[in-house]
View 1: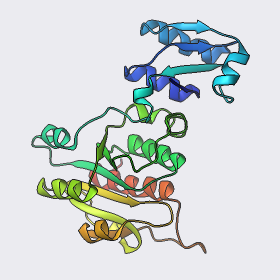
View 2: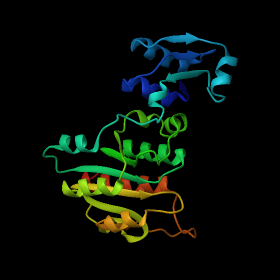
View 3: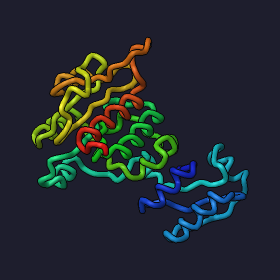
Length: 245
């Protein structure tokens, strides 16, 4: 058993309807009591425990923890197979997939999930067993978005890209040597590929991209943090797909 902390992470997990254990509370404040009421409404047990008990389970508990079954500890949103996602698109002409190539920092992983939720990504695809997996950090950093964003694990990201291409997706890799992102047409079925911290996108996946896109910048540092870059690029995709009023 593992434990989620953070008000947003706990609340969104409960709202999502995904499996979870009891809500543990010690000296709850107003916000914790609101979450407890939500838990009872959703037929989730609420157990009063001592502060020392929560301290042993998670030092930064803020008076409340949610039990999460060990089998769902990855912190991912609704699990989905890539093939099922493709089949579910039907005749949709607009779609957005995000491919994460060796994102190992759970803080970055969670922040990217938060941006995916905010900017309408339909699916996040990661390499099976080779990406950031830490439920509590991911849930907190994503502010609960990890409970909502559909995610698929692919043992071979190259094959995943091939499947997307076969279904009319254009693949764009995030790279500081790429073309200015706003000069590319990102409407239609689009996939963004983000490389890991430090190494960027692997060579084979770079070669599979239809184009590389970059965020023009004026600063002295040579690159942006991957989660920051993801937020900017996802916003640009949303802007092009659904022009803001």
